[in-house]
Length: 325
Image (tube, rainbow, N blue to C red; front, top):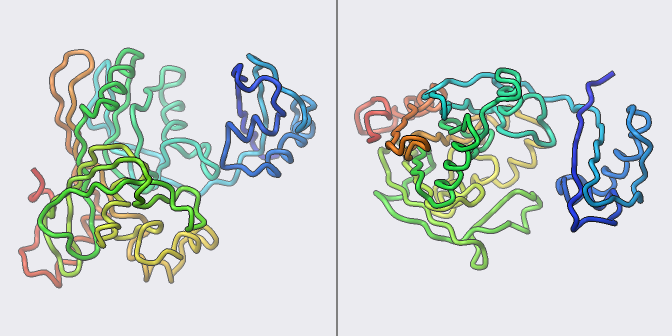
């Protein structure tokens, strides 16, 4: 029998009297109502209490639903420690490792890996990056550190810089300020785009180097919108290499979700993940107030792609790290 996942909820006062299926839909918007109702009806067979979709929930009620754990794709189950003390853990996350559980990933996530290694005292994430994005992540080891870090992030007192390999040439430097909101025409729920009625967003960028038809760009987000750097670089006409969602061919993401990684996608996308790396962080230490400046070099897969592109470039070959400062 498959492993079971426990999904726990506590009903807030605002949801008192709601149907159970409506309440679960509020908690897990990505699931369809039909799928939720099927999951609720299956509780008896899975060893849970007898429940019905129309059951009314009560304020303060603790609910536990069981569902079979999905078959999960293999992902890297490791990370590298960049900085550690009694308050903080800063790691370099590999591309492919999801931060949180999703519809496709439950056991193979960074949060699950941290629980396995640290138990109940696992460090808590202060922020997140996308599954395919590699690089620096800050985690808090105490409640006080978590509070201070999240306040600093909300106040934009944490400076972040990303490296991206993009198609084309965005120019020497600039600031993109297009507002960002959901792309309702794409058929992909998570996709965002620049739209006049979106949320304010601001990304500064500078070109570090050119290699043939590609550019290495350092991008700094000054707001925290979903997929912000990917959206803004795409809006400049310079999408990130390997980006299934915001690349030049919008069919790639749907094809990937349907068929997985194929030879045809490899030919069109060039890389199995988008070429975006969280390379630098600076922030005040939550306990001492001293500024921490942390860097993470471009990972081998992106460095190798960049080196291969040097054949068509006029500038000298070398590590991207030489350009970043």
